[in-house]
Image 1 (cartoon, one colour):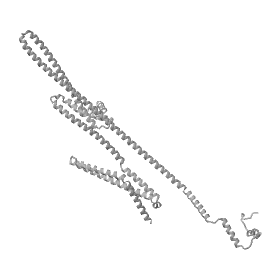
Image 2 (tube, helix red, strand yellow):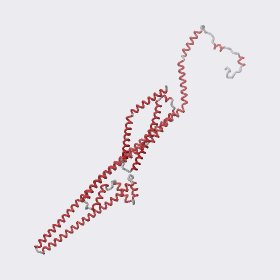
Image 3 (cartoon, rainbow, N blue to C red):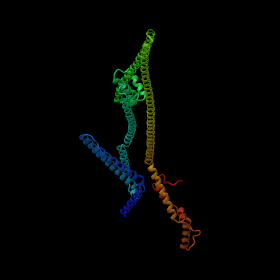
Length: 486
């Protein structure tokens, strides 16, 4: 009978379990299936990407082997985790079954049940320690930050590429138009470099100014790298060395540009001086020709005047051509200045945009850091509160145990007294009353006696009136306490 009842209880427990799982299916199974589908998609995409990689066969073979090893490790880890979860759930279900079943509770041994629960809690704690959920969360956040930084750098690189393509096209058109001007090559190189990298190589103004300041004080590149990394630890040695090389190229091109501009100005000044000297010479020649015309006859003067007019027209044509070239050069200089201003404004806008983006990224990082700290504090507080509650419960349990051990004998004695009193009360309730018994006896005596006992002596009176022999009393040895009082 007991086996049948146990089986019926097990069946009921299994049916209730099935109901619970069917109710919680929407909460747990659907997101799990979604995660499984995403995992399969990621695995297929990764395998396809590895197969389509155009690299050396040995390298590809190493990557495939590493991928297989990682997948095996992941499967082993998941299998062990599932096994631990199954063990914990089975033990927990058995403990619940014992707590819910009254027959098992009657046969329950408290110490074994307690040790079983302690082992179960220890297993759960070990499982929490073995599952690196917090480390995975940290790695996930780190990967998210890296992805965001990569997206930002990719966007920056794409913009730089677009600018580079535009500037390359502009430079090509300028080079095609100005092949005869070899002197402007250094200026074009400088402007191309500034258009691609800006005046700070996409660094912030603060970092670039600090770089210049430390560059003056430091003697060599390693000292410069150490000094910059003290203030800016996010900058790597490679970036600092590349910035140093870029700055050298930038200074060289800028000096070449300055030298080219100086040469161009000197040429312009020398051309102006030459033009002024030529004009002065022409004016002097005219005055000489006029004096000579006054001396020679008029017939010759007319032909000479014609010649002089032709010469003046030639000089005027040369002067007009020189002025037209000067105006063209001025227009080119104006255009160059306008382009320079536009580039400077574009660089400033890019720097501002980069500063804003950096500020936003820093704000997001600070917010995330604050959120992490708050979450950690909340978790710490929760843990502390749980520890305090468990400690208080343990103390209360210990106090109760001590109280039971010390007063268990007194409680048992009180129970015995109570049971005795209860038994006496029950017996008294079952016995008849005294008055009823006296009345019954009187009736019985009246029925038994048919004669009257009025004025008759009783047995007690006879005993009192009986005279004892003094000789017997005196001869007998008696204990002092048994001697009758006088």
